[in-house]
Amino acid sequence: MGYAWSLLRPLLLFVILYVVFVRFLKLGNDIPHYPVYLLLGIVVWNFFTEMTVQSLGSIVGRGDLIRKIRIPRWIVVFSSSISALINLGLNLIVVVVFMTINHVDFHKTLVFVPLLLGEVYLFALGISLFLSAMFVKFRDVGYIWEVILQAGFYLTPILYPLSKITNITLQKLIFMNPMAQAIQDIRYSAVTHTSSNIHRIFDGGWYMFIPYGIVGVLLIGGLVYFKSQANSFAENI
Amino acid sequence: MDDIAIKVDHISKTFKLPHEKQTSVKGALIGLLRGGKRSYERQKVLNDISFEIKKGEFFGIVGRNGSGKSTLLKLLAGIYTPTKGGIGVNGKLTPFIELGVGFNPELTGRENVFLNGALLGFNRKEMEAMYDDIVEFAEIERFMDQKLKNYSSGMQVRLAFSIAIRANTDILVLDEVLAVGDAAFQQKCNDYFEMLKKDEQKTIILVTHSMDAVEKYCSRAALIHDGKVKLIGSPHEVANQYTLENFDSGRLDGVDKENLSSFVKSLNLKLKSPLDLSNKDKLAFDVSYELNEELPVYLGISIMFRGVPVLESNSRSIAIGYKKDKKYTVSYNLPLNGFSKSELGIDIAIFNESKGQLIGYKTDAAKFYVTTQEDFKGGVMMSDGAWTVK
Image (cartoon, rainbow over the protein chains, first blue to last red):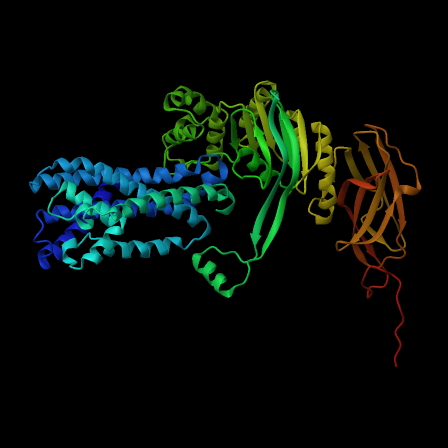
């Protein structure tokens, strides 16, 4: 029951966006398999949203356990990330079905997809650890995060093809965002080689590692902050 | 060192209580703009506590509400971290701060058993092996496939207790888990605790208010008072001290009508004069008492009018008996000529002679009425001033 709904939500969103952006606005005509391209972006972004939002409230939500028994605190965050991962898996099956229907060629670069999804997971995990620990002390973090997510949704080239932005500097700036980089690269690897990937945008410059650096810094920062707060969770909840 | 299960080494726990609680980023930012420093109140809940618990001991921790015993327990369980000092735990420790932690009301009893077992560190196979025993112990075979939310609270606690006692652990930390269920189930719990008491391998720490439980099961006990260990010793000593401590405040509260410490077996009052008295009569009653231990005592009485003592007296002027297990009776007579028309009550109390400590009391032990010839006069006192016209 719950899983059916978690499939239906991104699918409905996909239908709406497809009708508005592809049929009405004629976006992405230059990109082959644009519907699949669009769906894949939505699925990955949804995973990121779901995982961070669920993790954010996880420590406070399981306050009864945290105050009563001794369990490693990170388990709580980890378990909500697992449920998001399961949903992602189901959604990816739908994507594969669409890919087959659309006759998308299965490239060799498909092997990079799990690695890139791993990157998204680690990025979301770093943020989740940070947010869930912060939520114990500051109860309006949830609202703030919601706004940031909304901004992030439009700052990430999910609905629009990156090629619509003609300013190359702006393109590079957008690519600094690990989510933009990951989604673009996943699309490149899985759907079409005509779309831009990080290597193409940055022309192989050293700063193409910036998004990965951000992921690493956030993950380590999240872990350190979470660890420093974990001991006082029980008294602060 | 091998025979020590838990070593508590000079631990202190302080809670920071901010005067203005900031629970939002917004609030924190506004506070920052105002430039005001956040003031804290430091509440020292535990203050430099040290003790050791040996392997195989059944150790009781008692203390009044707010004495810090639950905080101590959470520190032992590793849920809180001490502000200062350290705790050494030798072996696997399982805390039961509350029964049924992690129970999910939407799942069935059966599912909850497995869920709870997982929290205790059992795998599925081990739980399946134990399942029948657990259900039998809890006495709820018929309801195992019902959702937990449809259980009565007693059933939930019984199920939780039945799982909890399966915990295969070296050190058990229990908080107020006694006294669940009906008499038959209580008996089972009692058997379980007796078994734990005999078990040389298991160390048990029990936090409780029940002095009966402390004296029955514990091999040693500690009394916590205002965040400090006031006494560590035999269960009997600790129980007595705890009971005494409760008296001093219990009397002020005036909640309990009768309260006897373990020194006093009984304390009673028998009115010899009639209930209705005129202020020309004498009030007469007997106070009888019996002691559990040989201890010099004296009696005190208060004549109460609407909760306020109007007359207090004690028996220190005479020598009264104090042998163990012997019933004594002392009489008291009071001419009522000083009293006006009123409804009065009698409180009686018994004190430890050497320390002047209250060891038992009974409020409203008897009531009586005083009537006067002059109907127009109110108040307790008979004496009156004079009216003049100016």
